[in-house]
Length: 480
Ligand code: AMP
Image 1 (tube, protein in one colour):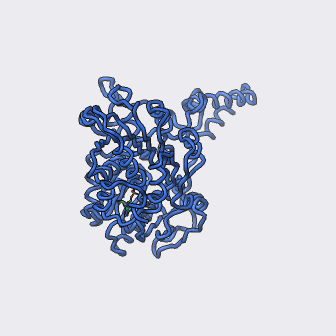
Image 2 (cartoon, helix red, strand yellow; image 1 turned 90 degrees about the vertical axis):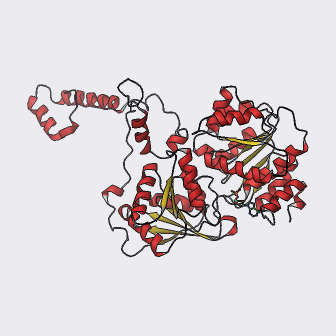
Image 3 (cartoon, rainbow, N blue to C red; image 1 turned 180 degrees about the vertical axis):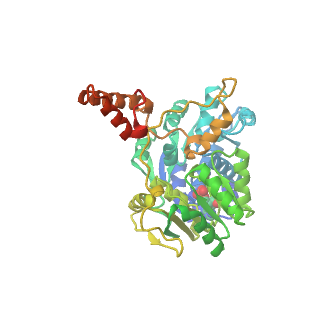
C-alpha cells in the first residue's frame, strides 16, 4: 500500500515524500480512507504509530478541496491534552501542509494570549488547542467555533485521566452538532466508549494494535529494589550500560527535580520537564534533549505526553504510575516507528500492586530481576508501606502581608504534589458535603462522642480522667 492508493491529493503526497515516509503506517492505512469519506472515526492507536498523520493528512485534503472563505473561520479543531502535544501536532501540520494554502495555529496556556489572539484574528483553517486556553478564548468571545467542520479529540483517554471531561462537554457546546468527529485514544476503556457514544455518530472503529498492548519490540523488565536504593541504581545503570539517551519517569514534579539534580551531581547530563516549569523551560529541555545535548530527560507523565523522540532507546520508570494505562503510554516513548527499545521499571515493594494491574492490563507477566547490591530488603521497610489515606483539612491559600494570595508560597506547595494538579483539573469526583468537612470537624465529633461515652462510664471519677489523659498522650481530646 502506498500513500497514493489512499486517495490523497498531490500536494499532500509531495509533503509526505518530503518527510521521507515511504509507506503509510497501519493506522494511516486504516484511518485515512475513512476520514476522507467523511465518516466519524473512533481510533485506537499506540503512541509512535503515526496517528497524527493518520488524521492530519485527510483533514488537509478535505479542507483544501473546499473554497477558502475570506475571513477564514476555524474549520477544523484539534483538541489535545498537553501543550507539548499541541505544539508537536502544529509542527506536523506545518510540514504536511507545506504545499497547500491552509493556515494553522496553535493555542495553549502558560504563555500570554496576545500573539495567539493576533494569529486567530488573521483567520485560521486549522486550530490546535489545549482545553483550558481554548475555553478561555471562547468565553472572552475572541474565538468562534461555530463553523468547525472536523473536530479531533486526540489522546482522549489522557484527557479523561486529566479530568478534562467537563471542558470537553463545554467545548462541544461551542462546535456545531453537524460535524465530522474523530476520536483518537491509545486505549479503549469503557469511558472512552461512552464518550464516543455521546459525541460520535455511527463511527467506524479502527484499531491499529490489539487493545491495551504495548509494542512488541519493547523489551520490558522490572528490577526489584528498595525505594532508598533507586537513585544510585538508575545512575549505575545509565553509566554501566552507557545510555546514549533515556527518558526517566517520576511520579511528582518535586521527585523529577530531585532526581535530575542527583544525576547532574554524578556527571550525567540531565534536565527535568514537568508542569511547574515555564513553557520556555519545557521547550528548551525538550529541544536540548532532541538535539542530543542532554542525555537524560527526567519527566512526569503530563509533561512527557506527546513527546516525539524518534529512536529513543531507553525508558525508565523510576516510579511506576498508579494508573496502569500510563505505563503503556510511558513505555510507548521507546520502540517508536518500528525500532526496538528497552523499558525498565525500578519497583519497590509498595509498588508491587501496580505491577499486578499493569500485567492484568497487558495480559502478560513482566520479567522480574534483581541487581546485585540493590536487592530489596527482606522486610518491607516502614517508609515503603503504603501510607494510610489521610483526610486533609483543606489548606487556606497562603496570603502575603497585603492579604493577597502569596503566589510564590502557593506554587512551592504545588511543587510537592503530583504533576497532574497544576495542569489539569482534579480527577477525583466532587466530594460530598460530609467528605469535604475539615478533619478537625470530624475529630471534634469523634472526641465528643468519646467524651460522652467516657463520662457515662466514669461519672465522678476524676482519677479515671487523668488516667485516660495519661494513656492517650497526644490523642487527648483538645476540648478537655
Ligand atoms: P505519531 O504517532 O503521530 O506521534 O508519529 C510518530 C513518528 O512517526 C513521528 O516522528 C512521525 O514523523 C513518524 N511517522 C509518521 N508516519 C510515518 C510514516 N508513514 N513513515 C515513517 N514515519 C512516520
